[in-house]
Picture 1 (tube, rainbow, N blue to C red):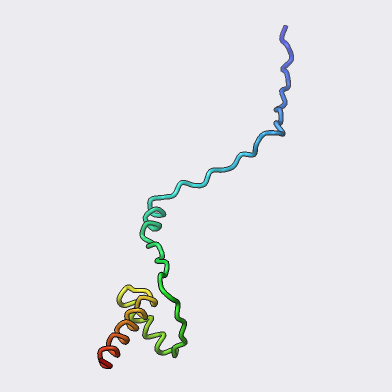
Picture 2 (cartoon, helix red, strand yellow):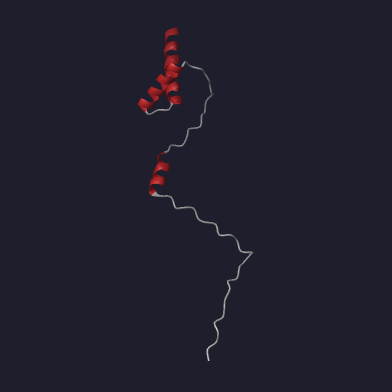
Length: 91
């Protein structure tokens, strides 16, 4: 004599912590791209703001791009050069 199959219903655990999916593991390309980005340099000097004509701003952008520099680096170099040259003329 065979017994009738027993129906089993899954028990729901209501107080269980929700399952949080793990973030995808970064690929080698992601890691390399992150490694290439230099950390921004925190300014140690005083900030000076100046308005310049659009044509001069474009020329500064072009020089920066051609030399692999930031606009700030180019402007600092130009200012240092100009101040030094004018100081030497005055002396």
